[in-house]
Length: 219
Image (cartoon, rainbow, N blue to C red; front, side, top):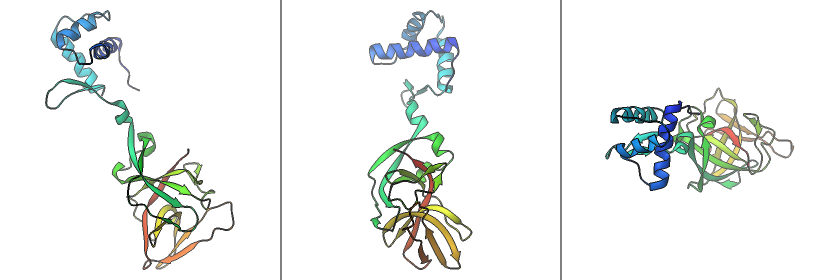
């Protein structure tokens, strides 16, 4: 949360009120008058510029790169990222065709994304119950949940029980990736139901690991 001192708050409030009333940003002289109506008088344009610089440093306003006019910063864009949704993936057998086109976006807090490269992130909606006993950041992967996938993940032979989005012969599934022996890969369920069985493949099979599941977004 951004904290302003009393004088900064009055300048910012005057700026917002002027914009709300006129649908335009004030000139320095107009802002000077607006600030005075807030009970705070700035007698020089230099003083006003100093407070405008403070607001810009705090990330509340900015100067347009071409016109140099003052603009409000969209705080929503600063706090959230848009994560594309690419269809569904089965939490059972690999039976849902992998979607290659964007079906929408999810707005996700940067606190959830952390330091991950946003360009590598996408979401998939889980279908089925073969992963309903597996927790990601304390949350089970259940049918209907969106899972957040890091497409920048690169599997290696030392990996064990990594939740991944796998595409087998063009069909998508969410499973635990485990290298069981040389040139042999297992995709394992983690379910409360016993009907789900592992899938065994080799590195020569038509298998693509599209990314690692890093979070579950509950509906």
